[in-house]
Image (cartoon, rainbow, N blue to C red):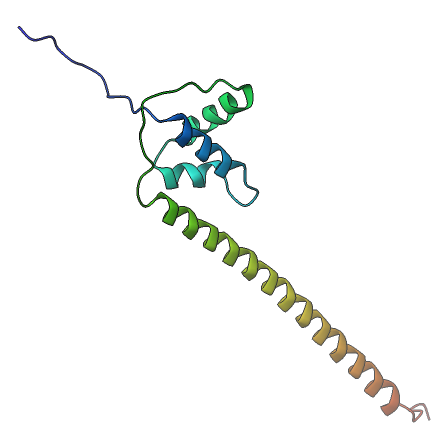
Length: 123
């Protein structure tokens, strides 16, 4: 009778793959979650790799290449992050311009009020 096989099959990733993933996740504009999604791995696994990388515990494992669309996903995430930063900058500029317009309108109103009320209305 054949032996029963139970449980999930565990993926094995190469040290090169892990190092690349860790390096991507250390870049300032990238998050662990975003890199993990792009590489189709669990964020906890990437966090564990980051810890192992810090401690120098990587050992050679069987080779598994990154998904073919991982680089494209990361580029798309970078572009989205860049666009979000730009939108934020533009919204801030817009708010500043609105405040400046209100300030100018108040100044005009003050000038027109002070120049139009020269007559004394108490008789």
